[in-house]
Length: 395
Length: 127
Image (cartoon, rainbow over all chains, first blue to last red; front, side, top):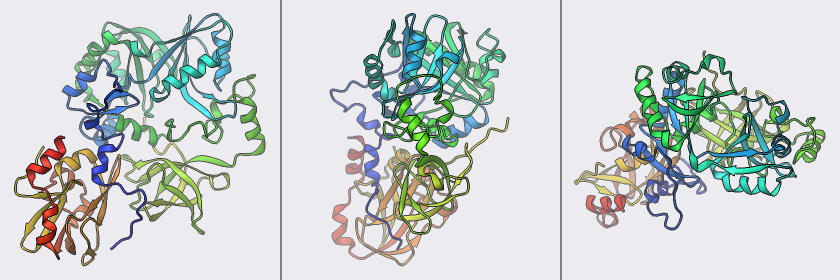
């Protein structure tokens, strides 16, 4: 009989308490009001398994995480990600303010451009990762639903200059159309010339007649668009996408596949891979951290980390054999078995059919090809630091 | 949801079919639905002895991992080797081709009382 440690054991019964398997808790959460999106009823009609995620009732899967994942990788899928938060920053000094509270260089951002960025605490820990949109008359920040209240508080606490902050999250429906046929599908629903919208740029136009911000961004590694709409247009556009998407086999995609898709790209998930105890450089976000742009919150400490040399790095790990890494599993030294780090995100990759993970390891073991072991519930599996993203799109 | 009347169940979502002194064990339709796509099943060795409530093996799904607990004490008489190549059988045929082990029971009469009938199990999953 094989050995299993007691730790990390999950009875089938416990799945009801798993954040991705709590459909039965949605009705029973008592005083906490679970928010709906404009599309909650549509998801239910499609037979989605609904879960509570960051205070929202969201679809985790419609048919199967694996099938939905492969749908996005092979044709095109649509996600309701209306739980994400949208803040508008207005006022004459908005650019200087956002530049001060985020690590990327807002001054270099053109009107119509999007920027991936982070907000940090003075000690360098990450408050949230976010997208910064520059409109002619405002800046839009798109933040994680789980951090919405915290972020708003942090921004208000650090508010300076002549700026106004407005939380528009409750008014906005956000759909992500992702996959190689995303542009062909969207072309059927808009007059905007999407071939002119480059990666990480956006335009204001119409989709299925509804006013929309069309952004060439996503969290899957595929070509695609994120469409910001007024809630009242959510159902219309959702239905129009399915009507137009029939020829591309468009399917709805849940949060489960969203997680496995982003993990195959080694894109960070806040709360798993990054949080207030990690700084951008060790998280592999040096490319967005512009230490020479002038002062910003966290700069001095992040610069000090850089000068002292990083002690650990977030790497991509591929597991040998039938080991399936999960958040929280220990990473061990391959020879002496010493605990040297932890898996922050892990799954079985639907495209590679093997266990893949993100995790922090000591800097000296972060080179491509470094060998470690992962403790998968008491069973040790060899794993290797590999080049990321784990998956590269073939087009 | 499919809950066959002729089976016995545990509150941990395993099912048992008694065939003489053998007990066929699997996980319920409800359990496979909650787990989602099953990609790997860690099975016990034939001949190993297990006690009621002890782990029989683990099931890896894309989203989560779960243990299967033995509904009864005894010896593992047979394991479903087909799951090595086709773990998705547990999703597709939870009460058929997706069975996990057969246990030669050691204390069936006494331990059976701890198991649930279909009606009691149905109450559990709709509560």
